[in-house]
Length: 134
Image 1 (cartoon, rainbow, N blue to C red):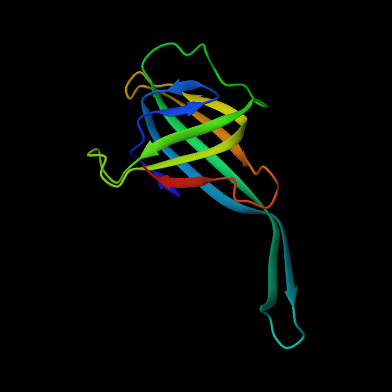
Image 2: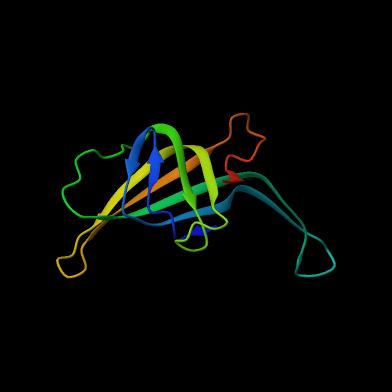
């Protein structure tokens, strides 16, 4: 999932402004691929465990001293819509843990912060990402 329109993201009660994008990537944390004896292609594939990674890219307009730290867990939420009119807006929310915080600094284009997180399921079964109409 790619969200280009949220201008603010809230993490653990702290508002991150000037958000450029939020992306949610789902990947296999563990997979099982089985091949048969009749040909070169897989005949059975299962993904019993998956990882939901979240990337928040934020433009920085000044110093950044209130930084999320790896290992911090909190509620992450934002409201997004197809365009800036707000029509068809949806709220996306989850519990997430910070894995990494990186910066890109350039005097020509400005500075940005990229925060990598992993979404956490409350029971290990339910999808950790909730999307509702607002």
